[in-house]
Image (cartoon, rainbow, N blue to C red):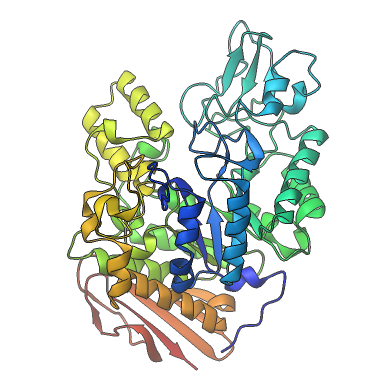
Amino acid sequence: MSITLGKNDWWKGAVAYQIYPRSFADSNGDGIGDLAGIASKLDYLADLGVDVLWLSPVYKSPQDDNGYDISDYEDIDPLFGSLDEMRSLIAETHKRGMKLVMDLVVNHTSDEHPWFVESRSSLTSPKRDWYIWRDPVDGHEPTGHQAAFSGSVWQFDELTGQYFLHIFSKKQPDLNWENPHVRSAVYKMMNWWLEQGVDGFRMDVINLISKRQDFTDGDDLFGPWMNGPRIHEFLQEMNREVLRDKGLITVGEMPGCTVELAQEYTGEDRHELNMVFTFEHMDLDTKPGGFGKWDLVPFTVPALKENFNKWQKGLETVGWNSLYWNNHDQPRIVSRWGNDSPEHRVQSAKALGTILHLMRGTPYVYQGEEIGMTNHGYTTLDKYRDLETLNWAAEAAQQGIPLSTVIHAVGYKGRDNARTPVQWDDSANAGFTTGTPWIDVPENYRKINAAAAVADPDSVFHHYKALIRLRHNFDVVVNGSFDMLWPGHEQLFAYERRLGAQTMTVVVNFSNDSVDVPADVNGEVILGRKSARLEPWGFFVTLAN
């Protein structure tokens, strides 16, 4: 059944692929991925079948937080290449029928951005209120809130005797979106990138840009900062000034976003964003009220089903879902909730992909996910490069948390799990670089690599190609309703998609054991192997008319 989508909703039938540039492909041997490296792999991505490439930041940056601290929004960091190479990459992506999305990081800048350099120069600087400054309270920080990367959200500046707000690193001061000049400068920059040919934006922590101005609401990590009182006003203004009726794709990263808020952010009549990245399913293995993301609890299949069902049904008629297992901030899903042992890695990676890609929403593939890359397996802290991980490890040591607990937690959930180089082949450094990689390559690259996956018709890569074809070819995948089957089952993840007289049924064994399917499932098998008793991580998909 063919799919008809218009200029402004084409993204409903699309599959996106996230590239973390420093770890994707290195063309010049300096150990860091770059734009030329990305360009050299465009045919591989076109063969996979993805429609959209999303690049994590390649802007000029001191690289305190791997490029999410931007010092110049309209230039490329020399680590990655040049502006001309960026323009060439956009053109070559378009030649292959794919679109390119930039990462938009406008909650904060680098402290080396000219705007902040001028802002901190004096109390009377014309750009003083482009950032958020406050006087000390009783000689201390204005509030007791903690930053996402440990420590206070406030950093004292001796020159002017005030504190500036930084929700993340102290080298990432928050912009003051209450100032219309800030907003105007951001919109001008966004329009400049559209003139360069980009096709949309993934917006970093975009629901933090409107902040409650008394800064006293709540003690949670993002308590006073997220989903603030003017957030819809700001996004609707951005839509008017930059986004509307240009056929773009927009996705907002939104910690603390509920289904109800997502309906507002993504409802078509709201004119804000196409979709949001939510975090609820990513927190299912985190202890509520514990010491943050590192305090682990066992993952359960019924809890995941309950969460996905809530979002699928909640955005079924209003708004739109984004679908993801992995990104640059999350560990590898096959190691996290699958089984990365040699016996089960390929099958469990396929099973997890099947669950995600046939739900309603736009799926995102993170680099290496399509070949079943695993967590890195580091056993010592000296292997880590991530600011968040290293800061927490130091803080944990001060709090008396055992080193073994820290090593286990960061090995399971640390961001560097996703940031090791893409494993292209079985040559030195997995074919990522001829130099010394900026972070160590996992030792399993000789068996787990893209060249081997492309050559093997039964690989994870070819399964992802099949999943992407189903989305492109069947309207029921894009626009069908969603109903969870056997919601209380401890091991089976199964659901139906319906559109008109057509029903697609997805049945996946989310476990290491063989499992009986509770009822017969009608329809022609279009993926997997149908059986009344599914093998570990077995699955099948049927289509009935």
